Structures are given as C-alpha cells and as structure tokens.
Image 1 (spheres, helix red, strand yellow):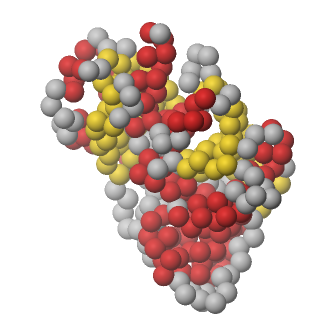
Image 2 (image 1 turned 60 degrees about the vertical axis):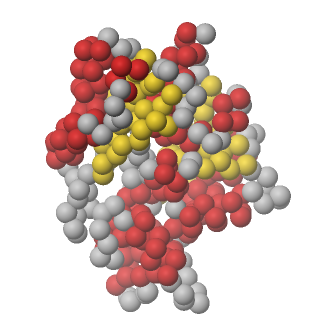
Amino acid sequence: MKLYLGIDTSAYTTSIAVVDADYNIISDRRKVLEVRQGEKGLQQSEALFLHLRNLPFLFVQLPAGVNEKVAAMAVSAFPRNIEGSYMPVFTAGLSQAQVLSHYNAVPLLRLSHQEGHIMAGIKGNEELMSTAAFIACHFSGGTSEVLLVRRGKERAFDIDITMAGSDLHAGQLVDRVGVALGLSFPSGKLLEEMACRWDGDTMPVIPSAVKGDSFSFSGAETRALHLLERGEAPGGIAGAVFRTIANTLEKCLLQQAEKSGLKEVLLVGGVMANGFIRQRLLERLEHPAVGLKLYFADPCLSTDNAVGIAMLAAYLSQRESN
C-alpha cells in the first residue's frame, strides 16, 4: 500500500499527516503553538523555533511502518502561489521535508499553504474536483481572500485572488476581540461559545465594510472595543463580530458570483469552522432566490493542518503516473 506524507508549519500549528492512495487519513498529528495569556500572537522568530521543536515530537507519533510505505511527500513551502509569498515559519517544515526526501529517496512537492486548505476542504466535497472552476473563500488568522479556483495543468489548482482584506484578517479580528474580552489566544472556539451563551434581546451592530475588490475589518475591531468600553454584554459583542464577518463574506460572494457566473463556493480556513457564520451564510446564500451552493470543509479540517498537503501529494503523484 502506497502512502503519502504532508508537512505544514503554518503560523500557529505544526502538523504532519499521512493519507493513502484513496485519500483516507492514516494519521493526522498537530500541535498548536503556545501563546502566553493576554498576548495576541507570536513573533515569527519565536514561532519558527517552536515549529522546529514540535516536528520531532509529531514524527515519533506516526504509526509504525509508515516510513517504508511513503511513495511521495509534500510540504507547505510558502503561504500562496504568488511571487514573493514568504513567511519564515514555513522554512521549518521545508527544511525537515528536504532532509527526509533526500535521506529516503522520496519525491518532494513544494506546495502552498493555501492549496492545502483548498484540498482539505474538498475532502467530503469531491464533486468539486469535476468542476472546471469554483469560487473559494479562505478566511483565517493570516488570510482573508476570495478566490477563483480552476483545475490546473502543472499544479492541482490555478488560483486567482479576486477580493482581499485591506487590513486585519478575519481571524485577527476574532482573536483581538477575544483577547480584549479576557479569552486566551487563539480565541475562535471560546468566542463562539460566548456568543452561543448570550441570551439578550437585541444584538449590537458592527457594520461590514466592502468596497470594490477589498474589504476591511479594522473598523469592526474599533467598534467592538467601543461596545466593550460602554458595557455591552460580552456575548452580544461576540455574536456581532461573527455576524459582521458573515455579512462581509455574503457581500463578497454575491459580487463574485455575479461577476463569474459561478454558483459553487468552497469555504475553508479556521474562521469557516465557526458554526454561527456557517449557519448565517447557508440561510442567506442557499436561499432559492439566491441559488448559491456552499461547500464547507469539515470543521476538523478547516483549521490549519497537513491533511490537504498530504492529499495533494497523493493526487499529483498519481496524476503524473497515469
């Protein structure tokens, strides 16, 4: 049985995954980087050190005998498939992958973190692989982009950025507001729990800001912090943050669907694991009057992980051999 190994050292998660030729997950090992209470993140140098420390710990957790069966490897070597895309943290996974590839004489594919998110989102939504093109949304702590995704010839996907955030990313908004409310970083799950516990009558309003091919979340952060200062209930503020993200994305997707004529939309990234945002988008965009078809990554595959990278190793290797 042939196996395929993927490595991803994103901003805040060290991860290693193994899949078989049918994209079944054999192993999925992750370790989230620790951030001190009250801090809003890590410097790249500190994150890089933590990834280098985590990788050996994760490798020893792989099932016995995996090494001898790996037919190809892939690694997230850069954030996106665009010139100049670079973050130091990805050198941790890349350097480890280069050593393993050379030592074991196994082919190595250098891919983007964004490709991995898209491929992870396709697991369970495999019909998207038979479409010529679809819209994708990648909303996380380090990316807020709407994408046009086409089947690629050299790569699995040709990706064009059609809309992007002009300041804060959606995940940064969530984490900054969460930390201000006394939650630990990253704050997504805890902030969602806080929003679900809120039982007020009227949710405060945080306006969305979409203009042309860009959108902004800095004003949303300012508004959320102002609501906190004036004594609004934390749960109401949390719900308002998720609603403004959903409203922003709704406007973006409607605009891109009209421009491209495409109806299929894949939503990936850690922010898309949020049930509040998912439900609002499904209710509004899959309404018969709108007619979009939304595909969400499995919640456990929405956050940063190496599963999509391992799946791409399997897909591209098998495509090349056929």
